[in-house]
Length: 628
Image (tube, rainbow, N blue to C red; front, side):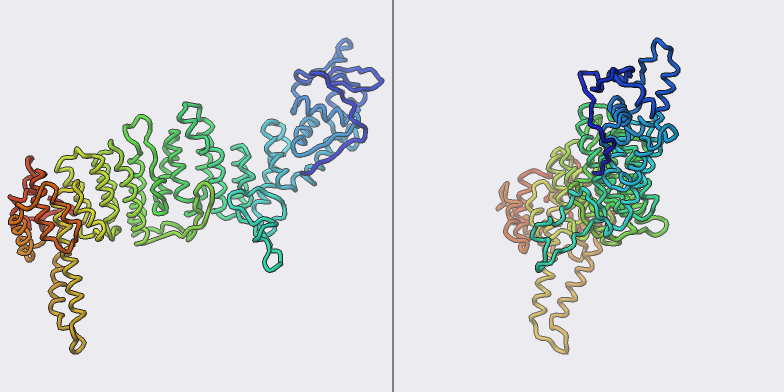
């Protein structure tokens, strides 16, 4: 820290409570009151350097010209004491913490060069321009002191000088930074650490692009805004670095106390002002801030009840890069007056915006202009690659399936909201339906009172053909699933197993002219698979495969007496390659459990299933993966 010493005489000021006096042989002849502090001083040294005191003494009558009240002096008693000591020629030390108060007080006292050469205003101005404004941390400290000295600091242009100095230093090439700064987010190798040398040669420590971010977080919001605007106006700082600065400031000044203030019913005016300022300062470039940070801001907007314009702006920005979010980012708590855990409607709005941007009138837009972004995770930051095109939609599907699994735990979540979000993901974005199956299973677990028609509608979201072997193994043992879903899973597993067996057998046969003797079998298998791909919603097999399904059903009825109450889904534990055995136990188990008894949906009862009728009706369904 820079400092300047003025005067050469020893400090002779004495303090007794709220009284300040000079220890000299001469009696004091003037009493100056500043607030609740009284200064007993001498007129001559003061009047020789202060035009304001000359005027005040001359304007008073003879009876009261020994007492003055200047309680309006900026900086208060401490600033006036510095000015008084300077008038006496006593030693006084100026630094970044007191120089501005002394400068404003000197301006108040009119300590100009016209009164005395080398007066206090001149000396302080030289110190500011030659030292303070050229030093990184001193400029920040002085800028922090300006708030308590308004409007004097504004009129003296000190705020502008500090802001311009800070912005200029923050905008230079990091390789030119040769001063100290605070950087705790990502520790650099220490000077004496094992990483500071390589083969005995000292390595040059790299200055990060965002080296200045933490130091300016100490600024009050209005001053911080001035600095960020000045940095952006210079145009030499990357938008990602500006975004990182806003993220760091938000975590320190907003997020750290927001929840406690809102939950305890405290006045959140300051938090709301900080939030709205941060949102207004966000760089316009895509990828300049992470999706996670934007979602945290959106959560704060929802919690504080900020203007709808801020909410809509954030929703639009998040929609451009939603595939970069995490499940935890999307779990935005619902407002206190809602009977729910999470604000599902807000996430639904974001999804709609994402899909609108991806499939707009222009045939889709890129999610980001930049290929890199800062990932804001609270403590550290790193560059992560963005995704686009099909990868983007697959990342979105994985994200939404994970989100559905979390919100499914909310017992107050309406089924229609769950289904709405699940259906917003494009069909092609889910190459496998394991994540969706887990979400559906969680919803069935937490909502055991669903009717048969509701279960049918819920399970209709899932395509059984797209379940992996692991998910299928779990599904056939899942007592919460409707019988028809389990039957579908078993059937598709048999088809996959049969196709795999045929391919394996064909590969073992001798070849003639490059063609396998088993090629006709492979062609038949391919034809069966092609026909299977045309089923609507993964329903029952088409008419060409009904005979095989009848044999399974007949065997199930024949062996039904062998199945106990709990034999249905336990049989599937052995192997999915023996579906007839499992089906027989499954049918008998479901029948003994009475799953399909009662109600109007009697088509699920094993004794009343007409496979030909069901097969014909399958092709006429219009729903996605409907389950009858």
